[in-house]
Length: 200
Image 1: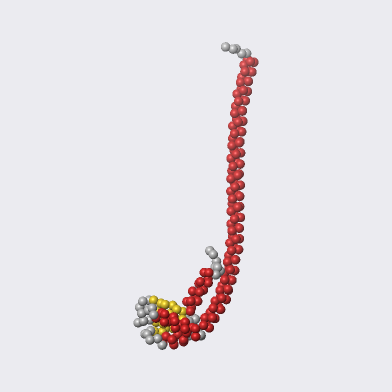
Image 2: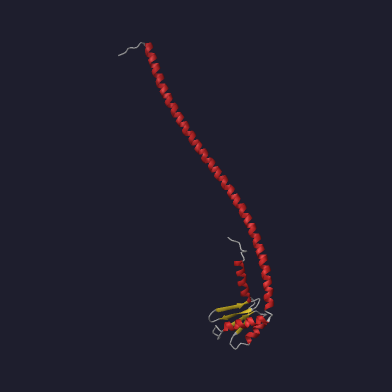
């Protein structure tokens, strides 16, 4: 067993304390460095997430603004197209209406109506029916009155151009042979095939 004098003992404890404190300080430095690195990494990740969130928000706002501008341009374009379509259609069908009004004053109209009446009467029960005609269409009124069948005549102010509607009240059947219906069918066909409509 070694014996130390007081001075040696002092130096021994001093060295031991220094060694222990150096080890402890190194451990603390490593813990601090690790905690610092961990905190910095977390801070960088948080900053990156925040930046990405800010970029995403700004990008979304830009996209929304851009889409709004595109939509506005589309709405204005659609409005212009609708106005032009209406004007063009009205111009086309104005001419057609004039031709229909001229047609009902011709011999060809009389032949047309005669054929239509004959065709319809060949395919119905002739016991009870009503002819609906335009109030101003004297030609059809005259032609119908010559028929050798029992019927009624009613004026229908919705018929503007000509032709007739044959109504079978007992069967609730209506056969529409008006020029108005033919015009409407042609207008519908025109709209479907003219490519002047707005795609939704």
